[in-house]
Structure formats: structure tokens, C-alpha cells
Image (cartoon, rainbow, N blue to C red; front, side, top):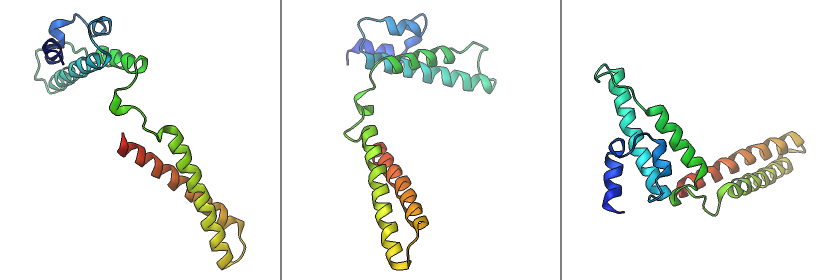
Length: 145
């Protein structure tokens, strides 16, 4: 990362008149803009906390403005590589849920062969399988992201 970007990240309020100006900077990558805005947001959060504790000089924070611009950047630009969906994405969640349902239904059928016929047992086991499969897939995605 160029040295000037480090300075922009450290002191964004000294280099930009307002947070929206970061979005229009042509010489910055989306990731650099995101890092600058995140830094600016942290500064504003600290200022807001100090104000809440009566420890500031009474200056207004730009927390709302920075948060809006950061949200705009995040919704209009692709997520950083670390946040990109891996091979399991939403399809993995669906696959995990379906596989969980199939395993649950199989378990329900196995239970009914041992205890006697009951569609309620099969339905309940299928539902539990769907839930556990979906949760398992979501956790796997969260760990891999």
C-alpha cells in the first residue's frame, strides 16, 4: 500500500472535507476507500463515546455521515476478498439444509421401523434435520469466510 494511503487512513478528516469525498477519490481503490472510511468511523465512534461521557469539547461527530457513506460503498462495491462467498455460499446453505432434511427423514424412518409406523416421528426428524443441516452449513460458511 502506498505511503500516502497510510496517511489517509490515519487522518482521514485532515485530507477530506467530508466522508462523501472519499467515494469520489479517483486514485484510491475500493479497498483503500473502505479502510479510510472504517478508520474515520472508529475516530467518530471514539469522539461520540467521549461526548457521551462529557469528555469532549462539544464538537459534533460525523458518525452518521461516515456510516452512511461506508454503507453506500459496501452496497455499491464488491466485498473484500476475505468476505467473498466461498464455494459454499448460499448454495451451500441450501445444500446443507436439504442434506440435513434427508438425513433427518432417514433417521425418522429408521426410528419408525423400530418403534412402529408414525408419520409424526418422520416429520419431526425431518424438521430437526433441516434445521441442523442449515445451521451446520451456516457455521461452516462463517468459519471459512
